Length: 486
Ligand code: NDP
Image (cartoon, rainbow, N blue to C red; front, side, top):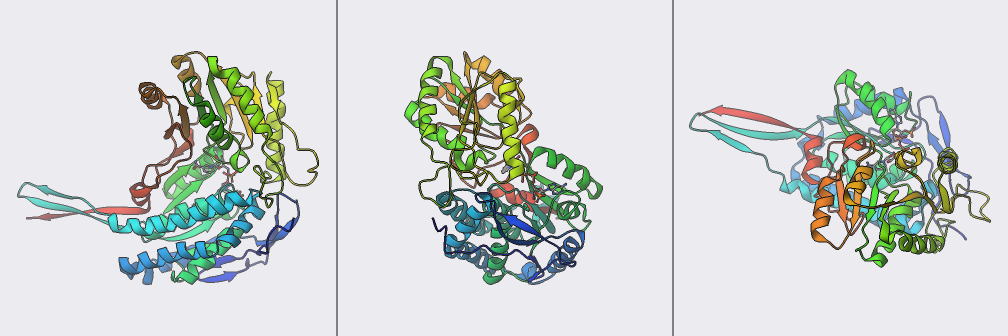
């Protein structure tokens, strides 16, 4: 079908309020993962462009953005949200072309939530207070909050605009200036976002964007730059380790949202229809390329076979294919490299003794594009790499458990600790199990339900720090205590 009336955009850097090419004119091709065709070109930035962007951001710290009153800043940030909504159809189309995700998903979740991030954090500015502390009749202390400075925002490809705005909105609300480095695989909505920020009235130099690669290039240069005060990073745990080592040289503040291998725990007493409906989403939405996906499914043994029969049958019905077809539920994986990686895990599952109950292959008739059928694997034990490592595709393992102790032992036996879901109608068990799971977020009888005021982040190797509401402001600002002797 004719995908959309919107054309792909070529992607330039946005530095000091201007769209610019790389100094040496270098570009790379942007590939559509659902067709394998070239969408357009992307300026390939490196250390030189990062340097210019950081210089502009540093200068802007002394400019109108800093001097602006709260009312004006709130109005501008709200306008960014409004303009995202005004261009929602275009942004949704670009996001689906770039990522391969179904258009209904970009249109109903990614883009509206991106706008909401701006609306939410602009409203939040007015709720921020600081503490005062009186020492008897000796002294009065009060804390003042100020921006942190120049912030580097480094993002992955799975939820490009949603995650970028999740960082950008609070960073700006707290008064900082930024340099954004989106994933090279998904540059288009970031480019439009820069235009929206300009159109909303954000002064030159406050928001800068440099496209390019991560290792030994634009990403690394941003992390190393001495004038960047903090890095907010979302991506793989292994990348986080590299960034931490590099950022240690300039002792930058770091916020980390990293990988996950999240358990989806199903007790026999839960409402199975509700479980199946939500588990289809938590397993396969966005092709399983969501850090919060429940890729390890644990089912109480008495319900195991019944769950599997229904889950396999319903998963078989999910339509895989063209992201622009309204019936499509699962689109294309992000790139050939990632497709090969996910397929490698499916081969490994067989080597490790697993059974592929469903999927594990390219759907018939889809010869172009990185398509993979929803894949359900059983028969693996907790030590298998397929159960331990993040696959980040439409691939889940299903494992039975016999008792709460057995369950918790297995669930917590991983390097990750991002999120978990518990399905049960037993209130006391829900509290008991949720409290013992090693994860930053536990959902009971739901998944992906987010109130942006609540803390978001992982434990163990899934992250450092929390985002959301005040937690985001804490990261993106400095507190100074002023002590006055009375
Ligand atoms: P990567 O870690 O590969 O990349 C993330 C970003 O970091 C990209 O922009 C990348 O650039 C850049 N980068 C890579 N190496 C460096 C480096 N040495 N220095 C600076 N920047 C660098 O993650 P993916 O893009 O593959 O994203 C998928 C991962 O993100 C999964 O592990 C997923 O779980 C995680 N994630 C976590 C979330 C959370 O909230 N916890 C949410 C969403 C995703 P480029 O790729 O352009 O070269």
